[in-house]
Amino acid sequence: MSSSKSRMAGIVIIGAGECGIRAAFAARDAGYEGAITVVGDEQTLPYERPPLSKPDASGAVEKPITSPEILSEKAIDLKWGVSANAIVRNAQEVSLSDGGLLAYDRLLLATGARPRTLTCPGGDRAQVLRTIKDANAIYAAAENATKVVIVGAGLIGLELAAELRTRGLHITVVEAGPRPLGRNVPERLATRLAAKHQEEGVSILCGVHIASCTDRGVELEDGRFLQADLVIAAVGVVPNDELARSTGLTVENGIRVNGQLMTDDPLIYAAGDCAAVRTSEGNYRRYETWQNAQAQGEVAGRNLGGGDASFDVPVWFWSDQYDLGLQGVGDTSGNPTVIRVLGDGAEILFFLDDIGALAGAAGLGRGNAVAKDIKIAQRLIGARVDAGLLSDPAHNLKKLLRAA
Amino acid sequence: MAEWIDACATDDIDEEDLIRFDHGDRTFAIYRSPNDEFFCTDGLCTHEQVHLEDGLVMDYVIECPKHNGQFDYRTGEAKRAPVCANLGTYPVKVEGDRVFVEI
Image (cartoon, rainbow over all chains, first blue to last red; front, side, top):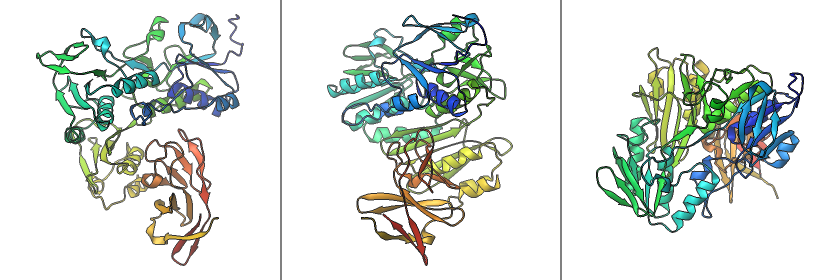
């Protein structure tokens, strides 16, 4: 194979999840005319992961992101069931698990993340949720289970708790931290969600650690034993950054990239769950949301095709539990500055920075009650806003948008 | 057979906003544009059948409340991922202060 830089090897994308596919589309939509090859290790067409925690009566819903027709129309070559073994940077080639070699002009690592597993004895008995295979295994096991222990009271753990509780199973959630949803949900809303779980009959134990998992359940470090015929570990993810590390790219809790999502090698980009992006303050941040996978995929795709786009979209997420919908955008750490109380128990928390500019917002309400205001908040991030107007539910937030 | 249905008063919809309109076993969204024009589309997003009534209208775009898919509500055209299928649209006329849709 020639190593001449004038060849048209095209774009290679490792990872066929939300991020990799969005990147391929974005490169094509931006007018890139060379070859685009996407390599994915799952044995199926790319699919959406959010529905995996929201199954229907027959199990997990496999919702494809795209179709063979659309891929062919956009001349995107998808190699599925194949993983990348190594990147040979001086030859600009990727070696594949099927023995093939793929030459690249530009390479995107959209390798995602994988669930963290329990390290205690018997920890491998716990099911994790990441893939359609994982989801089917959980719902099949739930068919024959009566008692479930979920380790981790984050969003995935609590979404599964709500889903399995609705099916009538007895659910205990155990959390090592001091409160549920401690990492990314404001305490006031986390408390309300936890109360909803308790009302529905789910018990949530915080500040407890797992000593071991057995075929009968989970033993806690304080000596208690929780019977379970299904144990699920929902204790976060670790980025799939080994491929980058082994080729000498800078990796520290994710593949380090600049604001254009470029690694230290100008021919290699990284985006989505696996990427640690340099912020304007000079820190590196890794985001794990579906919207981030899309947004970074689009930026990376444009740049792979020769563009100079920057990633700066405030990150947005949602979670549905029972009849409640949670949405958040931007930085919602610390105490909220203002609370906007809507009808029917819905409320939005706004977080302003020290110059009075909107840093983030999070809301909780029935169904999609908070969606519109969170979308407006997303567009207001960085703008100075009048706290009095934010708190007044009679004041249409769109007016702030026009003034901003 | 489509017929003209008296759906709502013009004042029932704020400028640059929408309301839900149910008729028989079907559900629709009726929009009032920033330029005081009225439009009608299917009520449910083509991605996951979420009702658009809680979505955000900006200019001529409706954004789904759940997964941020966007449509041009004049033509129903899908504008942003994850949506790829267009919304159906329906003729609208205003008579006096009433909005009629042909559905």
